[in-house]
Length: 152
Image 1 (cartoon, rainbow, N blue to C red):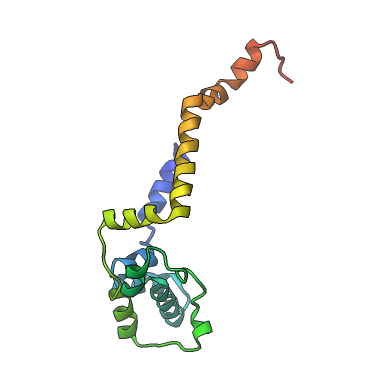
Image 2 (image 1 turned 180 degrees about the vertical axis):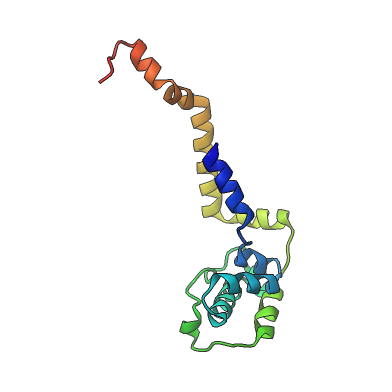
């Protein structure tokens, strides 16, 4: 119980994820979080540019649920230029299309590898629950003892 209480108290002091904040269009808050997490403001600005550049734009999200370029190496060093203008960062992220939860879920399930992973994961959890393996593992010591095995 004590480790979970310590973890809960620690969670109270954790900042929101800068990527999540930027995805929700809350770029000023994302910038503030990055300023507290990085050693310099320049590093924070570079990371915010990287975060916003990996988010799919409106045109990419209309073409396919998962663009082949999504998540690819979009490091600013590979582009050869770093913009220090805050307005560029904010306009880049705010151009991202806002979709409802159900639309994003439908897109995610429309992506075959994601759908297969979800079915496999949920299927394994269901098999584990229906097989009773949790009960066997919990009572394993008692079962071995009742079977006549001696303690080593």
